[in-house]
Amino acid sequence: KLNQIVCAYLNDSGYEAKGCLNANDAYDLMYNSLYDLIISDIMMLKIDDFEFAGTVRQINKTIPILFMTAKDDIFSKQKGFQLGIDDYMVKPMNLDELVIRVGTLLRRANITEERKMTVGNLSMDADAVTATVNNEEISLTLREFNILYV
Image 1 (cartoon, rainbow, N blue to C red):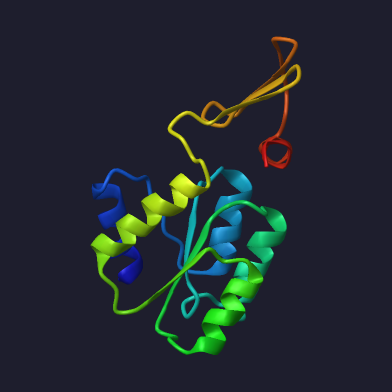
Image 2 (image 1 turned 90 degrees about the vertical axis):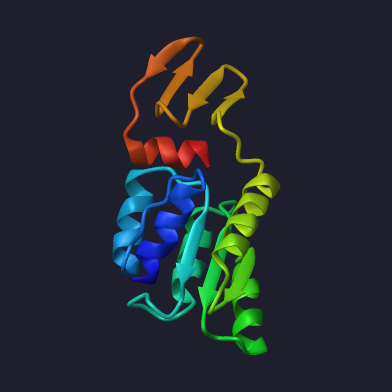
């Protein structure tokens, strides 16, 4: 239920949010699409509380990760930050504060409306999921695109 509430609130606030009920669903989405931010409720995942963040960080070193959890002890916070999360909110939480934190994390990560990148003669457009070399489009699987784009 919290998943649906958070997604609806973020969508109503101008973001495009998709919810997952477990880590495997989240991994599937991550391998098949590009995302700008991950919000994880560490108590709802069907794996070790912090394993998900560690795996995400191995896959993508720069994507912002925000934990939302009922765990308010310093050990949990320390472990999360050591694994590479970027922010930590303790439940119950204020949804307006969540929106503020999401905006801040995206700004710090330099996530812009237009997600295009050019390096030398390679250009990539994350929204269209296309890559060109010397202005000629090259065929890539989504996974290949994600690896290059990160």
